[in-house]
Image 1: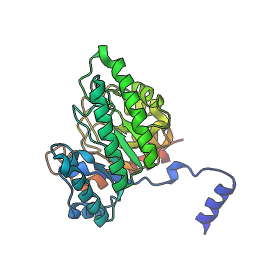
Image 2: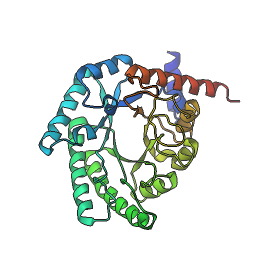
Image 3: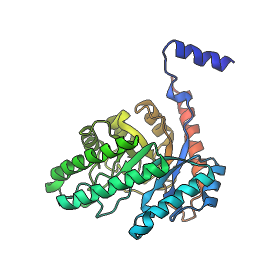
Image 4: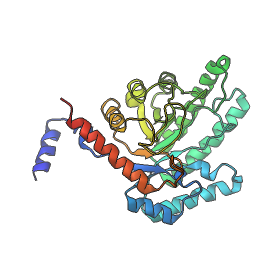
Length: 302
């Protein structure tokens, strides 16, 4: 009754409940299983305390004959439902050739049309809250970067229209090396050119600066995340606490400066840093430690 009275008072005063009062939830990409996850693997994830998944559509696309792609996507849907899990996001397929910024206009149109089809299929099957899209592949020469940015923006504008029809948010992921969006400033420039598009912040992909700087620049444009650790040199996709990221501080920045209260979606490798198999229990253990570090950090603030 006391908690109800507090919440009612906040509501009547027109105040928002601070995000720090809301416990975050944990999710995992289906990519952690390498191939299509089985019902048993998904049920184990749910038992371990993971309610959310991100469907990595590449598992149904790369190296898969066209006629088999949609049936594989359907099987993933059936297995997720059987396990009682929920889809937070869908990671749209990507490859070196499936590039929405490519200079060849006919190829770019073909790639955009294919991704539009995958958006419609994904929304029909999974009803996700977020769609994650890569703005390019690589390598990209400096002399072509401006042209490729313009091409990516045009493609994103088209694909956002498809996402809007499906009632789902389109989020563009930051990428490393010479890919587009390899700095928060460049990614913000791309997404701001198409109002309503968000950012997927991959903690492994910004290797030119700090996690805190990325969050500072991107702010509330961050609408979903890919959680994994690395060595501050190149992407590693290790479990949290196997690399160099300060996870308590990360969560404080993410919730405080970006106002993020969505799922903490883990995108980690099948193998841990020591070579052992990554388990969903490992993911949950790291998530709980992250929350504990975050809470301890909040308690020590003056």
